[in-house]
Length: 116
Image (cartoon, rainbow, N blue to C red; front, side, top):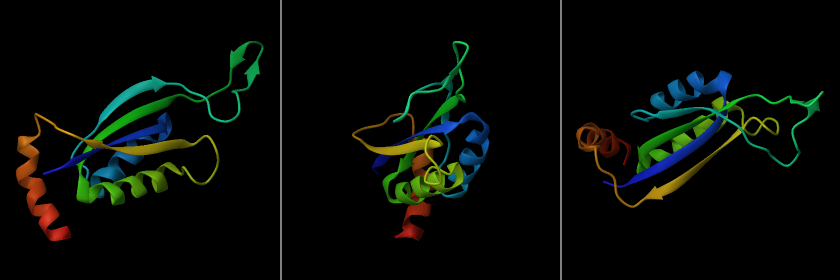
């Protein structure tokens, strides 16, 4: 079984909705890294030296490769990434190897066989 790593940078108020939607689309779990920050094309605005930007969460999903694209699209839709700039991004990367997921492989095998 092969896996993909989906990395989503999400506005913190949308984290729970994105995680719930990803699970419904086939993700079996996630790891959340709280309070990340970053910049896009435009530098963040400041007010008296204070940056006016929302906090981001980094969500890591290790998903089976056949389920990865629908999960990625669901994350983008719920996170509203294409609606306006600065709402977030998500990428997927190939995973060469993974350990600690043998308990998931049994349940994922049935799900993937139904999808294919």
